[in-house]
Length: 77
View (tube, rainbow, N blue to C red):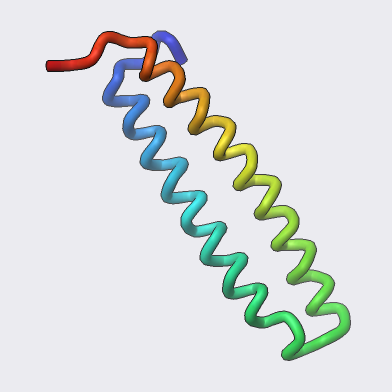
């Protein structure tokens, strides 16, 4: 990551934020769907939500790493 230019790091942050936003929205839609079909469909929705939460956690970790890298660089004027 240390070799990437600042613009690439900023683009990566934006890309990760977009993915996180989509997963969060997907979780909300899945949560609203739970209980309407019942049974196996509810289990699949809950599993998908759990998997999305794991990915969201990883994204937050990556974002923190990128932000840390950016904070150690000289600011652009």
